[in-house]
Image (cartoon, rainbow, N blue to C red; front, side):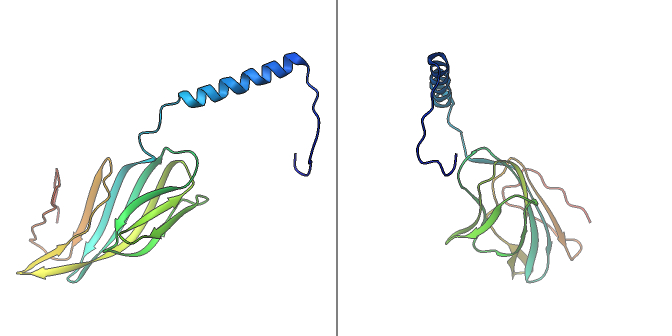
Amino acid sequence: VSGVRSATVDLPWRDFQALLKWSIERKAAEEKKPPLPADYIITSSTYEGVLAADSAAFTLTLKLEILKQKGWKRIAVLPKNVAVTGMAAPAGKKVYLNATRSSYELLTTESGPIEVKIDFRVAATRSGGVNRVSFTRVVGGSSVLDLEVARRDVDVNVIGAQSLKAST
């Protein structure tokens, strides 16, 4: 109770014993819980982008399951060699984008499922008629790249891809 500095509570012995037993059992149950394997899981990541001559613009859609219930969570999402141009988090959820020395990360006290969208650009290099875009992706349960290329008859190579489907 706020504003009360001291008070006395009289409880019958049985009620006190029941309250004490409940408190001890609750604490024991909390201690028996196995530790979380991770603070969060990235269940999927989708990169939708357009490749131009000098850069590529992407929207990263991350689906997360935040397991840790209490406290702040730090979730690395993009390397620092990209230029973030915007972010959208679910309404009513407190999710912030933070830049560190080496990466961009999400900061949140939320738990449960969350979907976040991050818009970013990355420079493209051209050498010998080949355009290259390179950045470290977030490792998720499933990652999909949907890239629109402004030219026809183009070979696309994604390093480490288990499957590649091209359409024109």
